[in-house]
Amino acid sequence: MDERKRLILNIIIQEHIGSGQPVASSAVVEKYALDISPATVRNEMAELEAAGWIAQPYTSAGRVPTEQAYNLYVSELEQKPLSKKEEALFSEETDDEQSSKHIAKKLAHVSNLAVIWAFHRNHVYYTGLSNLLQQPEFNQPALVYDISAIIDRVDEIVSDIFETVDFKPRILIGQQSPFGSFSGSILSRYKGHEHTGLIGLIGPVRMDYEKNLARVSYLINKLTAN
Image (cartoon, rainbow, N blue to C red; front, side):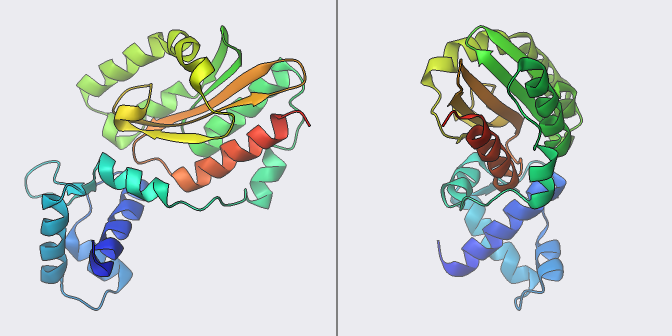
């Protein structure tokens, strides 16, 4: 992929993360003041689509990044520190289950995603699942059914994957996500003083991986016993 195609793909990814909507060639040119015509962008987008990086969800729409594009994007993400504002938000101690649940609710609120927190393999707390149903790509009846089926199986899924999750945050997109191919997730285990736990964020494939990776990483570092 040449430099111009990569720039256009990155713009489409950033726009899609922010809006959840297909991205049109005219929006790419106008918003980012590119020194190329909408026709040139359309041609580049056609080549990106042919190569499997973007897709057209329906007729006369813009384009959305594919799972392949998001995997490329996250493979090159640089670990960013959490903002000072959010550090303060998560500053309370997490030395007991009740305070951890409070932190989980804050994480669900600030990310607008679902949060799972397993205090051990067979003890799973989850919150923010209604956030998934508010995402624009999840307003289709078939996906609502899929999400509901996953919600019903959260405990079982976490129990199945618990021992396989790394002790550092890992991003799993689409086919790799244990919560369904329609989802993206960030999972990590941690070793506390008295137990091994797991934190996970679940959202659409287009979640803001950069910000959410920083959030999960901060909490894992905070929870890991020194």
